[in-house]
Length: 341
Image 1 (cartoon, rainbow, N blue to C red):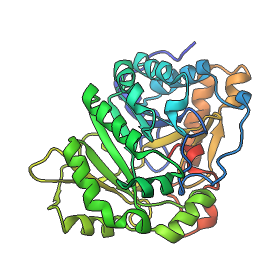
Image 2 (image 1 turned 90 degrees about the vertical axis):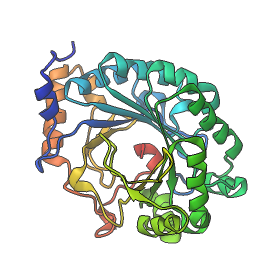
Image 3 (image 1 turned 120 degrees about the vertical axis):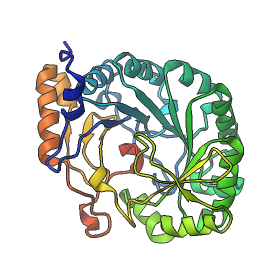
C-alpha cells in the first residue's frame, strides 16, 4: 500500500539533504539502450546487454513513482538511453500524471518523435527536451555514429505541431564538431519557436572523458560566439527552469540557456536525484553514491521502509558537489546513457 497522503508543506520539505537542499526532481531512466551511439555518451561498440530481470518492471516503476510523489517529487523526467524505444513509456507517463506529478518531462534524441509526439502530448508530457548537436547531416551522423538528422528535425516539427507546451533543444558543446555553428543552431530554434540549451561536456565514463579532453568548449565561450550574432539579454529565471543560465533573444519567444557543470558548477542549488533502469537511486551525476532499490522492492519491503531508506540515504550520502575537475577519480565511472543525463 502506498504511503498516506501528506500535506503540501510536508511534501515540500520531505526529502532534504544535510546541506539544506530540498529534493523535488527525479530523473527516471527507463532503458539503458539507445538507437544512437553518441561519441560523448556511449562507447563505439554500444553498451553491453543487460538481462531483463535486472531491470525494473513496469509495476515497480509505478510503485516507485507513487512513492516518490508522496515524498515530495514535483517533477519527473523520463530518460534513457533513449526512452522512446521503451515499449511502456506512455504507461509510465500516465502513471506520473495519476500520482499527481505536476511537471512531466521526456528527454529524447528525437529519432522516433515524429510518430510518438501526439501520444506523448495526450499521455501528459508538458516538457520535452530533444538532443540535436548539429545542423549538418554529416556532422550529426559523425557525433551520433549514424543518426538521421532529417528524422530528428521532422520529430521536432511534429512536437511543435501537436502543441507540447515547453520544447527545448539540447546541444552538447563540442568545439571541433559544432563550435562554428552555434549561431545557426540558435537561428533554427528561433525559427521553430522553441528554446535551446548549450551544455558543457562532462567526463562520465570513457566516452565522456575522451569527449571532454578533445572537444571541450566552455559555456562562456559559446555565449560569446552567439553574442556576436544575436543580442542576448539576461532573462528572469523561470519557475523550475533547472540549472541553465537563461538569456532572451529580443523580438523572439526563444530563450537561450547555458549549463555549466564544469566551468561554474551549480551544485549548491541541486534539487535532483536519478533512478536508473536497474533500480539504483543515484544522488549525484558526478559520483557513484546511491542506494539499490531493486532488492528492497523484490524483498518484500513495504513502502514506508523504502521511503525511510531513501530519506536517510539522501540525507547522509548526497554529496555536496561533484568532483569532475578537482578529482576525476571520484567521478562516476559509468556511461552517461546508463545514468540518464
